[in-house]
Amino acid sequence: MTISIWRYSHLTLALISSLFLVVASITGIILAVEPISHQTKGYAVADLDQVPLATTITALKDSYDEVLGLEVESSGFVKASVLTMEMETLDVYIDPFTGEQLGEVEERPYVYTFATNVHRSLFLKIIGRFFVGLISLLLLIIAVTGLVLLAKRQGGFLKLFTKVQKDYFELKYHVVLSRWFFIPIIILAFTGVYLSAEKFNLLPKTTVDQVEVQVSNSAQKYENIADIPFFKETTLAEIRQVEFPFSDDPEEYYLIALQDKEVEVHQQTGEIVSKGDYPFVTLASRLSLVLHTGEGNVIWSVILLLASASILFFMYSGFVMTLKRRKKAKGVSQMPDKDECEYVILVGSESGTAFDFAQRFYNGLTQVGKKVYLTELNKYSVYAKAKNIIVFTSTYGEGEPPTNARKFPAIFSTVTQPNAIAYSVVGFGSLDYPDYCKYAIDVNQQIYADDSFERQLPLFKINQADFESFELWLIQFSNKVGFTIPVERPLIHKKKYKKVDFEVVERTDLNVDDTFLLRLRPVSKIDFTSGDLLAIFPNNDEMVRQYSIARVVGDILLSIKKHELGRGSNFLYGLETGQFFKAAIDVNPHFHLPKNAKNSIFISNGTGIAPFLGMISENTAQNITLFW
Image (cartoon, rainbow, N blue to C red):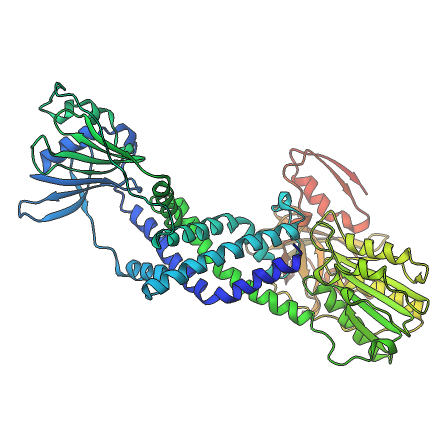
């Protein structure tokens, strides 16, 4: 299937189910707190596999006049239903060794009851249960299509956890969080579908067929239950529930629900008089309920809570991504006819980045009076008066074309242009991926092989949508066509810096090559390391200047070359020992010394040696070679 089908399915299903998913996610977060809160009561019994059932039954009978039942919760709590002296039934948590009451079973808080009703049926009873089941199914499909898209973006399923391409917040963390939570979300959705199917009786029967077991009339009878082998050998870890006999009548049996079957046990001999294995559907339903609710496992409950919260974030970030993509890919409202244009811009764009650059380039050409036609690569056709074709294309996944460019190779081979055309190809991608600009390379080779096209410029690759790189290509293109093309720069959100005070500890005089050293000490305690950047603001100028840091005994050491007209270098050289000024630390993790590397090679020229001096001074374990 093509990437467009996966993406549109993912988006359409998310939009259809958005309101229900919001409700389900919020109530899911609330319900995920319940098992965590329950576990904090501290009644859980460790090593249930070391507690014989006989010990607990004996302790209960010694502590209470009558015992009706016993239950071992998945949380590890042991609960008993007993009859008090006032002839009232009471559910209590007990110590299985002594029968001592640890606490009463409290009524479920209203917030959880309310959230459960909303989560299961939206207060719409049968109709609501149907919608909840349907939404669970849609969530499952959304998760699967999202996983496919994630694999496509990362370059395959085996590369799901490779480095994520740098991008805006919503897109980056849509990818990052989906890598961590796609398994819990798929489990939540699948178990939701399964439990809904169970409620609507769409699964095979779950009744237990009890089979009578022939017992011996000569079986040994015991006066004390603690002596009966079955009760001595069966531990609480194997028990789910025990229903006590109503009287001492030998015809009254213990009804015991084990993990995989139910048995009736003679209260005097310990013989199994009947048994029945649970059907697979029953076991699957029980597992589905535990996986869906997190009951009995705090860690899994926390994971479910975070997964439910992540669904809300995915809806928000997906909505933002869609708006950004549509905004970037928005076509030009009025263009000349394609057969009247001298310049044709063909675009292949998955996220809208390449389209944004193409749009700016289109506006620049139009501004200088050129007739320009902009369209997708999929819509390539004959252009009667075209003299220049410029291709802007990104690459998706493992060297695949974007959705709006996948038809281009086939179309190109069937179209013959009436004129000789000069062409240029600009590829957009990320060096973090092995198939960097792969599709742009393919397009460039295909056009180059056609004799009716003349290469105007070599293939130009742009990493991480770097606008400065694009401007370099623009200069080359302008030189080729003989006129300057004005292109509007994208708005850049100014980074907010947290300024702190620094004291000038030492400043050397100028060397013969106009370089000097500046040692600074932060007034307050701040975290920084060699390779980070010091951001300064000369004379309160809004334009920030950055210098690479060497950390030396807690101080900052800068190596600076003074330029005659350099505002930053002149400002720093003008500082005197003991003077204070404000600056900020800009953390630069990509230039930190790797902690686990056994050998490192440093290459620098001129004042670029500064961070390496700090790394060398703090190094205690690595072999370092410096080229300067």
